[in-house]
Image (cartoon, rainbow, N blue to C red; front, side, top):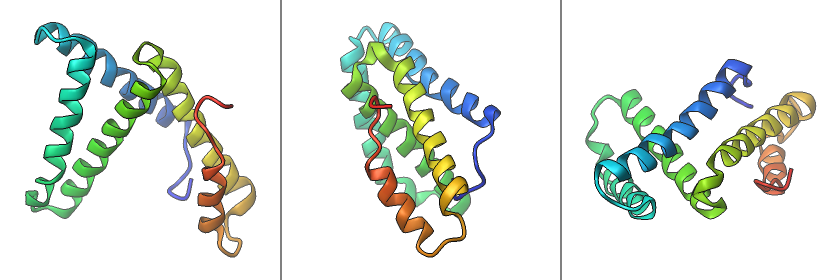
Length: 133
């Protein structure tokens, strides 16, 4: 990836984080709040949306960016997991990681340092579909 590439440890961390979003944020929290998983998911997405318009209040720019990015990642994973079926969340997490592996392989294996490498990477990723690989 145009950041630094992914190591197995980084990918494992992402996988565990994604699975934890569903296991803790939806399954466990739905039991604690006496909600269905779907109700919990919608509430989580609502909370994240409401929070996103307030993050500008975090004064430290690095902490603000980290918070915004992590919240967007979680929100996007929830939406993708909802689309693919919440019960398939582990497979969805694996497929998200495969997307990142594909991004890494394309950039470092073919595009890095070439003219318009980032443009070509983005265009390549448009053709990638979760669940199709």
